Length: 282
Length: 282
DNA sequence: GACAAACGTTACGATATTTGAAATACAGAG
DNA sequence: CTCTGTATTTCAAATATCGTAACGTTTGTC
Image 1 (cartoon, rainbow over the protein chains, first blue to last red):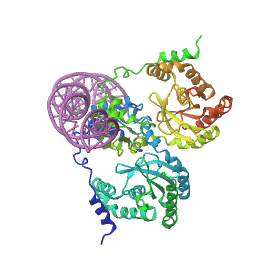
Image 2 (spheres, protein in one colour):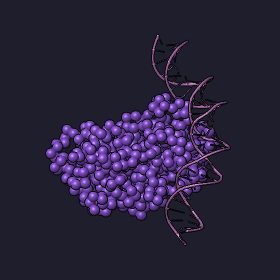
Image 3 (tube, chains in turn orange, blue, cyan, purple):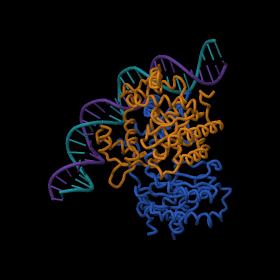
Image 4 (spheres, chains in turn purple, orange, blue, cyan):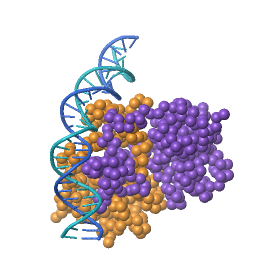
């Protein structure tokens, strides 16, 4: 008598939580470097500038420390200041990501199919990969203006409560999946529990039907479809997703028309041989 | 009797070199943070993976130090390891750039005109901004496969020997320009000297005719046209450029047809009011 | 298959770097 | 003009970081 909720927990039980996570302030890690990176990571799409004091507050650091770290980041070219003296990310930070984009040249071959999906759904289509315990969007197409949120490369999201994320999870085999789930449950116990049933079903559905759907599980107003693609030669798990505003998403259409079409598109993309065939299709 | 070569040097004479640059290992900067960032910056489009020893060699660090720094970077999610144990950038590094992309939403409005330019030139069209003493591409359109080098967001290049860079320089007014030139001359004395004449002419041309051309000054096999756009509300100088393979670039066509058309495109983009009008057009 | 060479990680003590408190400098508001 | 909130600099104390050395692995050669 195992419903999908307990299945996901059973899987997670099989996995090992990364040891590091526990002794947070490990003296084998460099705290100065971590703090510097944490400063850069404070910025997001609603917070584009921060004062010294604000940074110090959020990270629990001394203002003098923040001053020196920010000076270093400016010196390296990753931060700049506005006329008021507040800190902003400098465009040069893009240079750090360039090698990642450059290593995913194959994505240019997906532009055509992705455009089709975006048009077909009157929404957008995004390409995501696993990085750590999150997914990261590496590319997107679609009309940015007609949409509540604009997808751009670099957006990250949860693996266990989004269409992209669940499609990616479905690609993980055996122990890899168990470990990932164990970590997710460890890091987000409540969320994991709340979505465990939906997540388990989505993983199964991706493996059998080739797609899964999420009705606002991540972004409340967005209905998303995810479909797994495969594993690249350099070890990245890749999935496609499309998103559409909730109000324009009739469930019947999503489930019986758009979903199967996404699955079919994924299938034909896999024909190109860009990705290793998922284990469950071998 | 001042030819363009001496003009650029006269301008540079008026500027002040950033003081910091001198006492390199300033104890007001955090060396640990710098080293960590330097590790991330070692990766580029031809070097996508590095061993511990290789990193240590290139940065002149102890292997043990590198081990610890990389462990930290992995912990933060910006680095990962391949099966052989070599280090790779993790896709999560894209998340650091997301706020920059998000802050340049206006670029979506340029997609149309940029596509036209790319098609018209049978090459590509890129959008660049100044960051530090370099330009950084923030967006590009064009056919990636038909080209010797694929432009992607995050590519950086020199302000003083590229079409994008010179178009950006032309936007700097008075002391801002002088300071920038002083720094460039200080950091790249030989290059600066070698290109000073071309650079001075290009700046003048951008201000009078609205565009400039570069015949392989940066990427040897590429002819590029640059055209200044203006200054955004958050203080970024922006320019457009297009690039085409040298063999397909007839000089007459570039100078008398493509160039003026770029200038005209820039003019109509400026009409949108996205950018502050360049000082020399006021 | 055994050996050597190169590599990556961990432990540990010395030390150089980072830190936080306090003082100084600065900007904006009233 | 003073006052408040903020940023930077200074300096001594402390502690986080570094390099050495030792260990365990892998790689490649003979």
